[in-house]
Length: 449
View 1: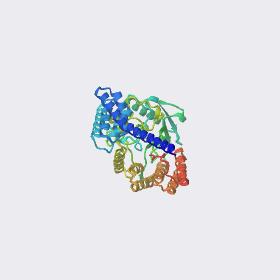
View 2 (view 1 turned 30 degrees about the horizontal axis):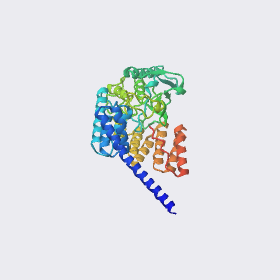
View 3 (view 1 turned 60 degrees about the vertical axis):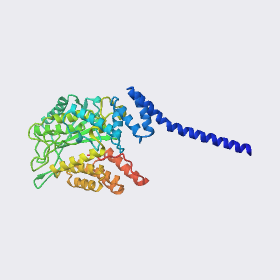
View 4 (view 1 turned 180 degrees about the vertical axis):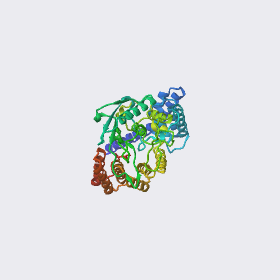
């Protein structure tokens, strides 16, 4: 018994000693990393300083000294996407200290340099659902196809003006490349000319959008962009060459990833109200891309995309910018999108698209009742099947996120009756799974517009 007790005591002592040594080791290890990192920083060996100070920071992210010297090291490294992201995250942290101030200062320098080199732009209007969607420039030229689904024979100049509009974007940008193809299945940008929906004019008032663009994507994979153009106006007239050219020129901007609109009437991507009979963003003369239009698309293609046609992990990020460095936080993006939507509605109070944007912005800001009201207004104003589909789809997403599963399924089925798309099939599967499992819905479905 005595020997057993002695063995137990010895084992206890050994375990305690080991535990103390182990605890002491992990207490001293971050201090060691910090000490080594400081030495390398003083000797301007920033790569080694980064290795040690990052380890110290990861051990204790609240330590003000670890944070400050870690940021100081980051500011001396080549601003890769990884470095940009690390500095931005500290600049937005809740801990208000010298590290956060230094990080904010560095972000401000980057912003100033980027904007100085690019020039005036409206990049804040670009995101889709707070995400950057664009093509991978290394896959240029983009394959474009023109599909005529109209039930009438169209004037030859329709095709001429469409191709001329693509040429203006290509020539003015200096880097965009397009190539026409007949392979609709593998096309990147599909231009679809279709017959105008009936019953757009009531009591001599017509409400319609000349054209619209819809991105097709799943997760982070961009499949294609479809530009829908109508064959005639609501009065049965062919569009003039100017009207058609200006329309497609504007929609190409959306198909490239500019998902919002400029506030300036000088820009192609501006939305305004002309006349009393219908809403149109286009002018009576041929439109040209402004310097801000070009600057915006150039800056867009310098930002790391969230959605693109190349697998995200295959994107060549060399020389690219971590998008929040330019755009700010998700909250800031949504707030700006809210103001954009209000401005859109002010100019065109009878167009469904503005209320869809308004609803999405409110939803992202977690203002649920305002979002629901805006989406229902969009549904009330919707004229085309596409607008109705988008309104139903977004209302379904809204109710799904609010865990109102029966209503979510009802609106999803309404959307499915209009267009049985892959995204609506996925949404209905998600809703049914949430209903059967009684678990939190999978957050894979996003709002669309």
